[in-house]
Length: 360
Image (cartoon, rainbow, N blue to C red; front, side):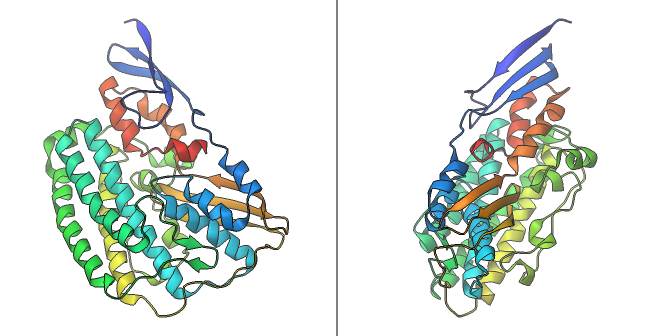
């Protein structure tokens, strides 16, 4: 059978961001693939060097539109470590709450995108409808649905009023009821399983070789989560499970993310119930002592790493970001080999790529 090459991207209905593939196919089966990135480079790491530490909080928030809060969390806790600054516990509770709300909305957005790519438009509509529950909570707390501007060096800018807490619990109850429906579809709907089981498989060895992180790694049996393994904020005060699966396919990644939503809702309840009294921020000097720090957080897609180097001025000498998407991109060559062309959108959606994060 003759081989032909099919280009996909950088603009294509199966891609939510610019990315380019060259797929070599025999009939309907892919035998080889080549990947090219670099279409949306924004020079954000260079912008960090031209602005003060305070201004850079807003630069960090714009690295990713889906998980903006976790980027500012990683950045701020890195600068706070260089300053030797103690952040008030109430501020850390608010930070952690927004991190988990952001995880829920990111996973629901991803579930909708995956469902649309496999032709399951009903789940897409339901997932994005229920995601509004979380976005409404975040908007009520911060005033923003995408960029929340919650974090500041030394603490947070917003507080949670006592009369907000019962309303947030009620909305979480509503979302919890909806998650039962989603879990039922994932576990029992034959069409969904036919399009996701055995598709885009990664073994535990492949995950470790490519240094994959986050739900993609956990769906292949790698029980790794920064929230548990190297706790930050107040994660060491929370009770939660690290969700894993052994199948390593798109179905396993769906189950991991769906169950992580359930765990995140539980953590949100704990944070609201344990919210301590106290100030929201510590005063931070504008100049940061010379030094180097590595700040790690568990973003919705996996481990997020900020390397910040200070030269003693009011601007960082260097900020280097390592996002979870980058190692996942390297696995696509293995995931696409041998699958049918109809499974390409499922695989691309299944790993939850963020090209804006990767290209920066």
